Length: 150
Image (cartoon, rainbow, N blue to C red; front, side, top):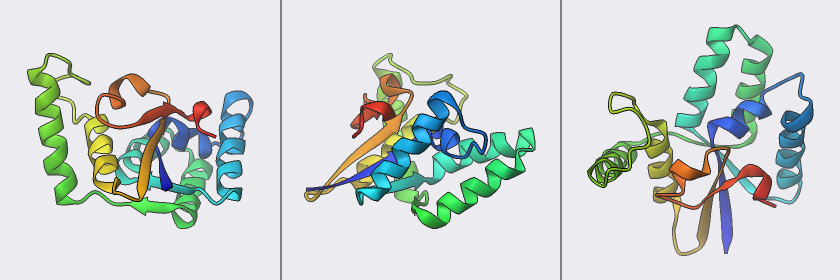
């Protein structure tokens, strides 16, 4: 069975840092090692949005260029209508269960990311979200701290 590894905004943001050290450098090395092994790495559009908006706000042009380069190198998963419909259902389900993942007025990127991941799963593909926020995402899909994915 093959697997897809979707990058949440935490690991994706670290991957764009041109002055990486410490855990940020470890994340970049982790990503390189996965690619060298032939793993399929995906940038979900919602993660791109979350990282991009902050890079633009902070004026981090080199990091923006790195993000654009990653989009050319890795698989990019755009948001489709089906994704948003599923995300709305997931959002409502956790609210009704009393387990919200964000403020009621927030867009809640986690449910959009989870919906994208769910729609990519099939009989031949495992989908894992590489994240720094396992608690919210693991309610919906397989989500692991990026450091736990080898």
